[in-house]
Length: 79
Image 1 (cartoon, rainbow, N blue to C red):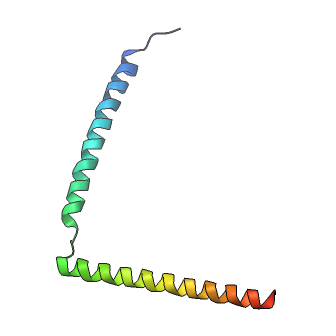
Image 2 (cartoon, one colour; image 1 turned 180 degrees about the vertical axis):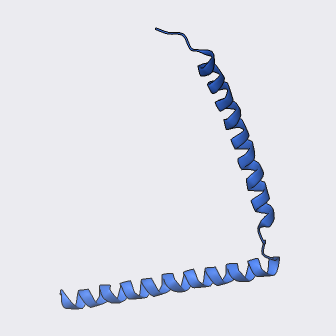
Image 3 (cartoon, helix red, strand yellow; image 1 turned 60 degrees about the vertical axis):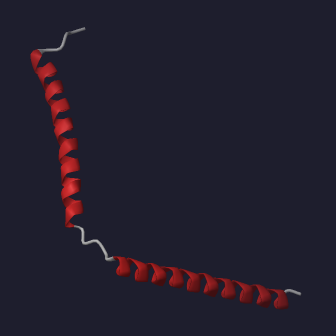
């Protein structure tokens, strides 16, 4: 078994430093990206949320109606 050389130990310590710098760089980049986000106004958020809720409700009602229709139709065919 051989002992590690000075090159091996220095590479490990520089890797740890690079990992630390990369994670702090990632956080700094994340904060910078969040500063570039155009956040919606309260009115926009409210109106778009209502639109999403209405469209999901309409879609659910349509799917339920189609399902009931095909259930009724299959019960008529397979009596």
